[in-house]
Length: 318
Image 1 (cartoon, rainbow, N blue to C red):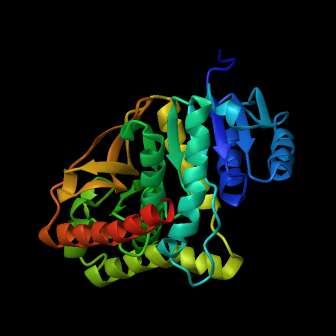
Image 2 (cartoon, one colour; image 1 turned 90 degrees about the vertical axis):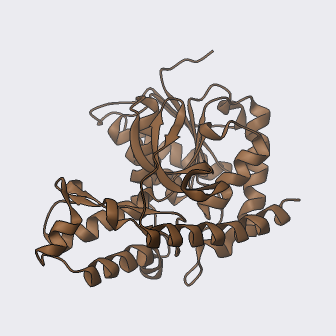
């Protein structure tokens, strides 16, 4: 029987996972947190370190501890960030075989625990590993969510905001498709403070060339950060908190998450970044935008790239 209103279990107590937890406890999104890691001392140490915040936070939590897969049984949300990190010069898709094997082992443990809540995955390559987890567990696809292009879109919003000297909170620009090099900038649905982005191009406040440059910058941001400090974690930690908060609060918010396509956007049987409604049920439905012909072609190419890696992942976990 559950002891708390909201319980979140984290699998993978590394930099990404603990950045998520630090963001989550500062925003007070849950009452009960559990850390699971292949290295129990890391989970225990991080739990103790994070517990030190309880006395000074404006919205204190009930408890945080290191635990085991048995703790998944009554969890509301499971967040998976486990896997080896991306190396300098390496693409996310280069990590597929090894991390697919790790994800399979996690999926089997989670399934055996009796977990029935919502899973949010950020392990890279996230689109591929989210599918691996869903197929191994056999869970309802709507209850398995990838972080998708939530972070990619946040980076694009910040960069476009800087170009136009407006807050990124007033910028609605999106990258969809792979969380990686083939993601697609959906300029046809971009707005700034409610105004179509095309109006800013027409008034010469920003050029298409500048927009294309921001897309490249957003896609390459992870490479730049990894080159400078070996890993990225604060941005994705905040994005994971946003997704989990939408689930726990049953918000029905639309976020750029990894949802499983079943014919939407002309593609099927893969997870990738698309706009979807997020609630206590997971991702309820995918919002289908009318893409331009060029955007649809780019999205199809992104899905084709993912499908190649999906085959490698399936081979790796046979």
